[in-house]
Image 1 (cartoon, rainbow, N blue to C red):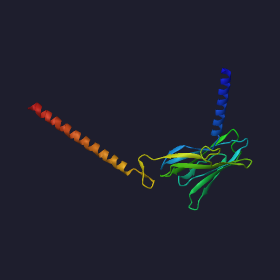
Image 2: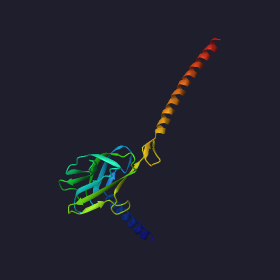
Image 3: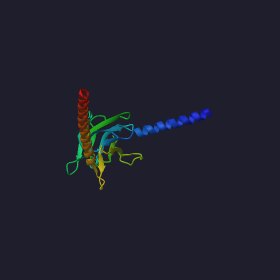
Image 4: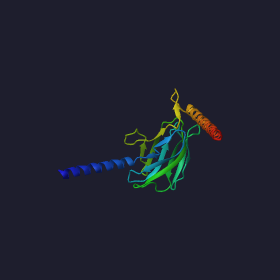
Length: 208
C-alpha cells in the first residue's frame, strides 16, 4: 500500500515538474507588474522550446498602454524598429547575426519606455522564429497554450478615477496634504508660544 502511494506521489511530482517546465518555456516580459506614468525597463525573456535554434524574436507594443523609446544592444543580435504613420514605435524585431539561441539556452532582450497614465495592463504579443522558418505566436489569452505575456499596471499613489473612467492625479489628496502640513506648522508655533508664556508665568511667580 505504501509502495503504491509512493509511486503515485512520484508520478504526480514528475508531472507537476513537467508542467512547470512547459510554463517556464513561454516568452515572458518582465516586470509582471508596474505603475502608471512611470519609466520602466522591460525585459523580454525568450527560451527555445525546440531542438533547433531561435533566430528571430518580434514583439509588438500596445501604444495606448506604453511608449517604448530605447533598446539595449545585445551581442550577436541586431534589431529593427517598426513605427506607425505618426512615428510612434509599435514594435521591434531582434534577428540573430550568429547562431541564435540553442535548445538549452534563453535570451534576455531589454527595452525602456514610459507606461501610460491610464493603462491598466500591457499585453505583449511576441513571435518567435526558429532556424527552420517555423514561427510560434505568443499572442493567445491567459491560460492558452501560447499566451501573450501580460504586465499588470497599478494606479499611481494618490490617483483617482473620474466619471469617464479616466485615472487622474488626486488633487484633493494633494490639497489635503498641504492643509495638513500647514495645520501641523500652526500647532507647532502655538505650542512654542504657550510654552514661552508658561515659562514667563513661572518666573514671575518665583519672584513674587
